[in-house]
Image (cartoon, rainbow, N blue to C red; front, side):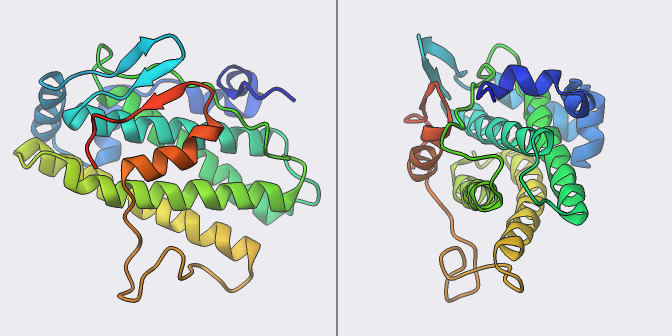
Length: 241
């Protein structure tokens, strides 16, 4: 089984519809944002430093709002590739309900990935990343679900932690609106995965504090946890902390 899901998942029959690039029009509909608000979003992106491959094997996320968007784009690429592989090579003993739900999550993550790909101007967007899932046993339920829990918890914590890094502008408010919509979906994913691992459980003290709030993680913490699953070196040092 190849670890290069960037290529192989594109070739998986199931995933083909997920990899059709969404048009910006679809992106607007998904976001529920007005055309005017989105125009502000896109114009705002163009004012920030872009991301990209600065040195061979290293991906620089950039700075400013574009850096934050690329940060989210990188994580969504990772999640989309992971679930595409889960669906393409389901683990031993997977139930019909689990397959259905994990396929739905795979579609959500692919939409999130394409959402950012469409939103970030091409000149500022990071390239497609190459996942490294060599540590994951895709035939083993516990290995898959434990990894899924890691990704979902990271996603929720990342969105929560990145909110304060977005500029205090009109377009920044639009970013927060869109990020809030995505993180609510990620939270549902996280709860479902936890319930699969431990029936009747949907959260834990490791992710929800005494005030009942989800954790908010800094980019440094998130990227350190995500890096082993990405072959390129991710540089998020200019995003903020």
